[in-house]
Image 1 (cartoon, rainbow, N blue to C red):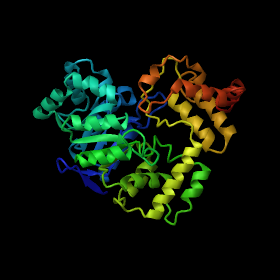
Image 2 (image 1 turned 90 degrees about the horizontal axis):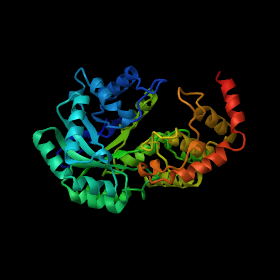
Image 3 (image 1 turned 120 degrees about the horizontal axis):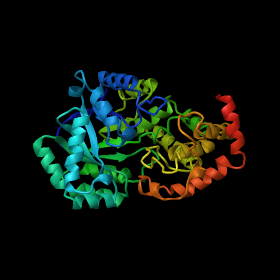
Image 4 (image 1 turned 180 degrees about the vertical axis):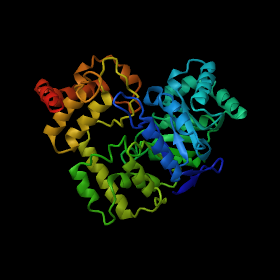
Length: 397
């Protein structure tokens, strides 16, 4: 495992961090604690020392799970990160209430890396007005939090003013080879580094979409490279190639993914990709932009939908329609996966959307969700959805 330093405090953090937003789950939707605990501890035993969670992950299950998973001496082996749910804060007192509840859930007396969660310009303006600086100063003085940071999903100009608004230790941004000009982007990455902030990267694989399934047209480009890597290795190595990056978070929920990521994290030095390799990544980026229809990362901040639409799965399947080179299979899986056949709930189709707009306020990617769901209906439901649902019920009976 390679390590990089946080400029403000000298902490040496593993370049691979364990993100607890996409842990393995059971059929009823609850975290598979036995399996997830083994995964988290295995990663720690193999060098990972940064573990990230948040108040809403797994609908509130992630923090209590992690409090149990880090028992038996594992809490002392890691730097623990969690986040203040900024959109839920209505008063200065709410900030203390959330922090105290998180300390209790995580079974710890301090948070090593505490973030103001999912900021965009308006959310920052609100928490700033509610005296978030005073909250952070006092929490740091008391030892309840050690380092203060924020995670960001807004526009580049808002990112810079947030960086300048407080004496932050670190920040967390979305960054991958498709997002160089999206949100904070490369400009924000370099700006934060110029202010000596530690930089934590989320969505290096865009919710897994850059790793699996790999479109045949993209695989052909990867196969051109003299050095053979999986799609996930390419994407992770590209992020780690930037010396400004401190930690890359991966939402690892498959044992094979953990092994693969640990292997890459042993050799992903900054500035280690050749110019020829960087050009291959650029070629892949252009191909993805030709293929993809919606920039959803699967973060699930838009969920739950009051009408029961599984928005991330609708968008994932919609993108797969254009990337998998197998339209019939994709349409069948849409019927099976969103028809309540492979889950304990009911139907979750795009056509259930009533355009209430609730999701628009939550999406960190600022996607026009209702409009794109109309396209999902047109291309994945019409005209024979009922027939495909009936066939799927027979297949999976």
